Length: 155
Image 1: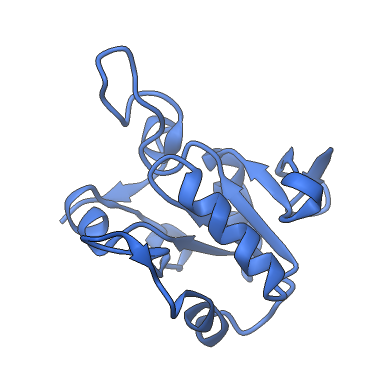
Image 2: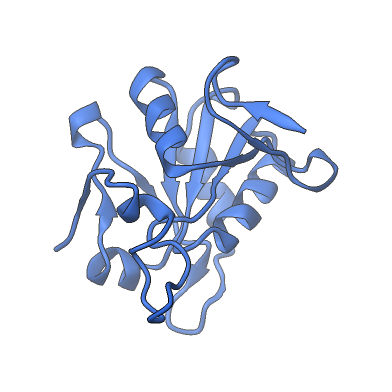
């Protein structure tokens, strides 16, 4: 099944039983974030990851990622306030919402939960920020936001 974030743009495979809008590449998410002023990027990684690994840089789009951890560091326990934070920060329920984590696992779970909570167009950014491990067991070189050359910053 193919799904679109814009009606004609980013496409991906839908989640099990339509539980979220589908997976998109980081570049597809960037294109929608660039063209749709209502589109939102939610980075669900931990505060430690945001600080030490880096963040997507959306300043060129006059946006910033919404930082809402799916799990709390260091124990990686579920963030009980996750859905409430989304509801507080994202005014509309119909705009495309792109969820991003390290490599696509947590963000997929977040997209499913947000869809169940009433957000209509939740997408998982497949490959996440850093992507999967390469042959040398390093991230950031294949798939993912960084490897696709999209803007990012590090503190």
